[in-house]
Each structure stands twice: as structure tokens, then as C-alpha cells.
Length: 527
Image (cartoon, rainbow, N blue to C red; front, top):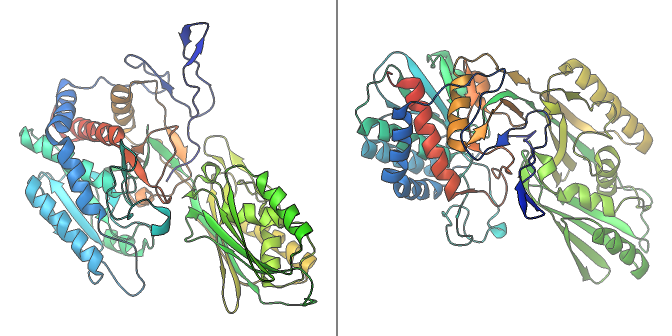
């Protein structure tokens, strides 16, 4: 759930002297060797001795138990299933039962409201809200060393690998043990700490909106589903989808043809894999395609011949679609090596043509008519084709966009339709079932606990002058008052949620436990 990540130049050795060079661009933060300094705009607070003590106590007392509890939550495949709810899906039922058991074990109160689980500490009417989610995105077991629903701590020492480790089961566990540490010491709370675990963040916000109509949320909230230091702006999750109808004209039985073109798994993941099937490809044409493939960085291809049929399997790098610049989109790269040839017009060739002509290898909608734009703080709009699926009616194409401030939804809609119209006219085709959605960007830079969270991060991460950032991800913090995102991913480090190699380092997991504990103390404990 992040983008526009800060950039860093790491320490380099020059003439046997060690210098730390920091690249000064918008949104960056600087790593420091000792302590931290307040920026001119954000006057940081000192961290209380109680916060420091409790943060270290949480790790020393519960560090390994936190990992063990994470392993128990990871094993449940909490992916949304059509026709089932958290109260009828067996995996969600077992997941919530485990949350209840852990809550009882830690001495926290637990309430199950179907789509929403509330886990809390304290009785005060004033609350500190902690916003998370328990559902996860699908995972392709073929692309993992072990089952994505098994916490893998051996494949790569130091990594906690599994679906949900970063998004969002890891944060749930750390928040619960942070509350446990506070409970252990009997500290007096002036705010109830209330952890909300929503069960459909990845698929449907409707039930949460309905729940909030009869529920009074906290007046200050922390979403632990994004990035540090503190997120004060989120782009709007947006989408363009349509169907390229079946169309076959001029296909010669002996001529080269593109028969199928597909790739991607779900709308918010940059596709790692894509496949094309061709027929009647001679040695010369095959060599040209292979030469193109060899020039692409980060891509791996398999060329499988079966009689007069050729299957090309493309393998790139999956990432969260909010940060397409971190991935290698197999769909766009496969389309690129097949571009420029005179494929007979059909569903597959039209799909390949659209991808290569309207998107190319860029991630900022550079080729998509006039829709590309940028905001000074939130950065550029991104566009990634995430699903290309062949159906009986035609090729379903889904593009995920992350929209910053700077253009209205009405203008984007008009520019999108103009771009689609121009492409359709050029290719003599009428797209079907065209649907668009323009999510609203969010800016929350006046929340009262902003400075406190910046101070906690600066102290424990040893970062000088941390500043708020913007991300491309879209969390449900948009639905809560004074909601700021705080971790779990470090700035400048690739976010792995939604990828086919989701993990969090053990070191980061422990640092998160420290920072969440300290933040809860600073914001909810009587000082």
C-alpha cells in the first residue's frame, strides 16, 4: 500500500574514508548514526522514558512469541470467496477463532461483529483506534518455495515469508503484543486502545461502511497497513476495464498468427506471469522475438514448440500495483516483444496491440492519451495492466491506476474515453463493457498525533528529521477521522504485500513491535 518511496544513497567507501551522502528530493528522509533532529516544520517531541522502556520490554519478553503467533495466523487462507462471508467461510471462521484465543491469552477483550473484529485494552470512552485487516490477496503456490500459508523462516534466514506477513497479519500480531506489554506493567490509560480487524479490505469496503454507520470510531486513528515514517496522503485507487470482443479476419492457415494472449491474477498485483500462443512461426521470426526478449531486464522467457504451435511463457516480478515501478510487468513485456509484426486481427492480437500501443513499458500512463499528470507531493499517477483474461465473449482487460490530486474525476473520465475512442477508430473495433472507477485521493496532514508518530519513528529508527510522505496504496484509513498510516514497511524498502514473495524481515518485525508499543504509550497512557 505504498508508493513514492523515499530514495537513499547508501554509505560508500571513498579513499578509505566513510561518507554518508543523502539525495535531497521531495519526501525523502535521512538515516542518522545517532539520535534525530526536528525539521523546521515538524517540531518533534522527546520520547518518554516509559515508552522507551516498554518498547524494549515488549521485544525482550514477547519477541519470539510474536513470531509464533504470526505463524498461527498465516496458516488460514483468508481470501475472499464469492458467496461466502466471514461468518460462513471456514478459513475466516478459524482465523477469527485464533484471534479470539490469542486475545484471551493476552488478556485483551474481543468482540466479533461479523466483518469486523474489535480487540481492545481499557474502558475509557476516549479511544485510540488501530486499523488493520485480516483478509489477504490470492497467492500462487507454484511461485513460492513453501506454501504461502506456512510461515517460512528457513528458505532465507532472517526473513519471515508468507501471505500476510506484511499485509496485514504481521501488524495485527505486533499491535496485540504491544497492548500486552502495556497491560503487563499496569499502566493507566486515558484512551482505550482498540484494534479493528476488518475482514474484506482487499475486496469490498461496503460492509465496513455499513458497520461505521452504527459505530463511533476513535477520534484519532492509526492504520498499520502502509509505510513509515507517517503517511498523510494516499492516491485514489482507480480502474479501467473493458472487453475486447472476439474478431477474426484474414487469418491464413499457413501464415503466422497470434492465437492467445493473457496474464495476471488479480487487480491489485503487477502480473508476474503472462502467456502467448502463436502458430506457424518460422525460424527467422522466432529468432527476432527471442532477440527482443534477451534485451529485456528482469524478464525470463520459455519458448515451447509443439508441432506448428509455439507457446511463450513470460516471467517477470510481481509487486503491489500501487508501486508498479518496483516490479517487472510480464504482460507489458510480453506485448513488447510481439509488437510491430503483422498479426492477423483477432482477440489476441488486438489485446497485444492495445497493451503495447496504449501502455508500453511505462508505468505512468505516458502513452494513454492525455491522462498522465503529477502532483508536487503525491507524485505521478500510475497505470498498470493487471489482468488480461481470455473469455468466451472476448479478452477482459483490467488496468489499475493510482490517482493523485491535480485532476478531477470528470476530466480523467473524459480523457480516458477520448483515448479509448481514438484507439478503437484506428483498429476498427468496438470495446464492450467499458467500466471506469475514479477513487478519491486523500490528504490528512492536520491530524493531532502526526508529530507524535514522527517522533516515535525518528527515535527508534534513528532517522533525522522524518517528514510525512504520500503513497500510492489505498487503505481504509480514508473512512476514519484523523487516520494516519504508520508502517509496517520502512521507507526506501520495497513493499512485498500482494507479491508472490511476501515477507518481512525479523529485524523489522521486532522494530515494528517497539514502535507500535511506544506509539500506544505516547498516545493512550496517562503521562
